[in-house]
Image 1 (cartoon, one colour):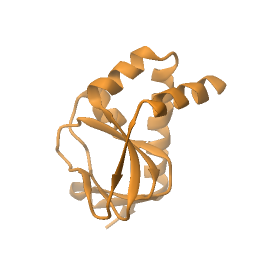
Image 2 (cartoon, rainbow, N blue to C red):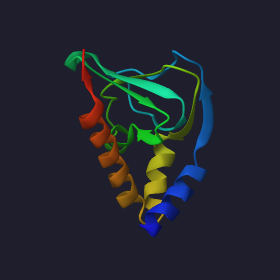
Image 3 (tube, rainbow, N blue to C red):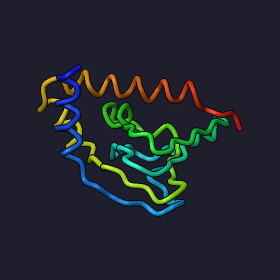
Image 4 (cartoon, helix red, strand yellow):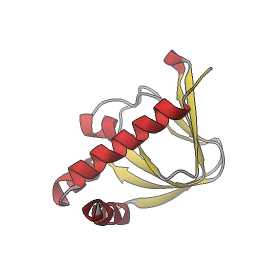
Length: 127
């Protein structure tokens, strides 16, 4: 567990901090996944329009877009802020470099993907 904490600190120190205003899109469903986002504070709405599902995450430090960035695929949902929010942003190529650069990074990100999936399963609302 301590290894994950150290890896997490190193990874987070590598992100670029960006502030978003309310109602700004981070990405849209179907857009090529070029970035991974880490919500530091604020609130984000994740919307899966084809599945009529929505999820709001508020002040929950969590990574968004890991799986899509690793796979080199497109975003599965649309992400938009619901209030002024602060994120750490990682370019896809740099993010993938971090996975190989830091010991335990692959396991760390796999656990972060599981955490994101569990949030989806617990809180997703059908619209």
